[in-house]
Length: 104
Image (cartoon, rainbow, N blue to C red; front, side, top):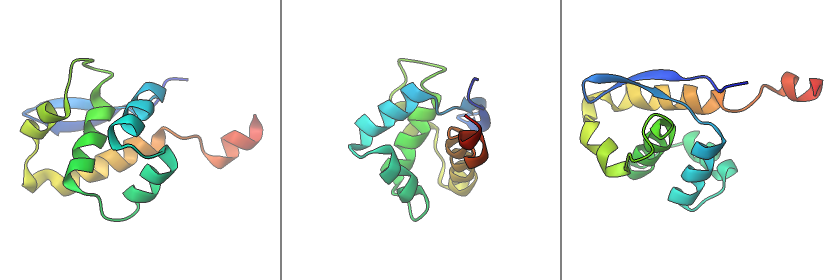
């Protein structure tokens, strides 16, 4: 089942955040921490560099050559709350509901 894509306005265009397996591995590699720690980090305050990495990983399915610096050029401080909310929704959609896990 494909992971849900969440639209986000960045750099004047609509992009789609999606955290599939490859995105999550890339994110672990980029941040140097396991995915469980990334989830915990998102529950609290997120550093700007970490937010940029989260966005980057969620967009690499659309453009494999995308870099975190590319993403940084699209970000605007006035959008950070909106973007962080979209990242959280997309990130949470990457993981099955507890009821789905019990069915399998």
